[in-house]
Image (cartoon, rainbow, N blue to C red; front, side, top):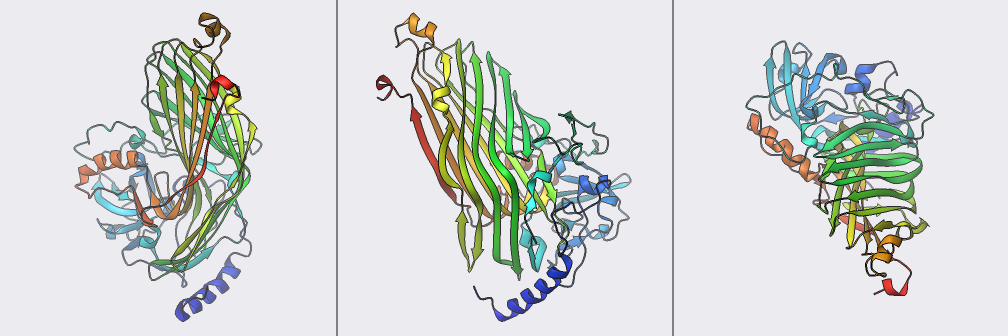
Length: 492
């Protein structure tokens, strides 16, 4: 594709500077490993002659060193009011404090000795007006660190009434560390690089607990539910081999003209579930896991990008009888690269394919019940390269939504009580994988709804669940398969 003359000259100049600045870029952290503030709050931006920021952007001097705490699930940043340019922060401006502390200012007020700044989402072109950025080589996602803000009230599915005044009392610095599998989860790097997965702190939505996993051999979540006579546990993962990311982004006049994002190493889907109910009562909890896994990318032309992984999970049950058990496990390979390219106003998506059965889910289903029963697991994972953290990640993104369905037929139809005692029954397994991609930001609709309750405190305009291009983001079906037990009586 040929660029317009002005843009071509800018691209050549930017490329020349990029060669000098990124010659040693090897996807290592952008900050020293002992700089806990930068690891927690993000690296500071810096002015660069080949990058023009939007006129509404306010770079606050000092970066993470002027952050005193982050509260309200990452929405409110309490900073030193004496920091350079802090007095310019006002509703409508875009605060650019660090690579994680960036967003549209919804409220800025003095609170004791602090300046409490509440932010909302912004698109990448709300921050950058002109510039060209690319990864010099693949960014290893295996180096990702767990990152979580405190007080993530928006992770819960049932929002409480909004508070009459904004409160920002629980500080990130005072939060106790959570240790899982010898990994300290306070935004620092894992204590050991030997573990194949980095385990995060668990999130809770009603009685559903979900623990995110990432990233050396994939991303996924363990989950459990205990309530109303239902005991359910399991895991689902998007398996990957040496996962990495590459990207290229050109912004000209606050418009994205060229973009490319590739996530390498897609491997497949692995699922396991074990459920028992004594009542037959059904549930449908959904949890947005308020933990992201992030790899800081060394500053490119003064912009502290990062590669981020975000996840959510939902469970749906369809029990028709009490005293029912369902167990199943399976794995399916799906190799290739996922992502997209964008140029001349057109997208060219790229997705993994070639689904193969490694371990049959339908053949593994076991259980006993006098009625037909079903379980569905909805798992969503998105990969971002851009700015922001946790819920407000903006830039280039590609994601997969996987739905796994497990159906166990009644055992009574196979000889009455004898069939029930023998655990007979027909099984069905369904696997659907849909892909989404774009340039901008996306927030789970449930999370956006809860955040908007909170924003009423500031009389702020409700935020949209997504913004950017394409609008709306397309949904591409990659897999839509079902399998049934290989017995004549089950084929009808």
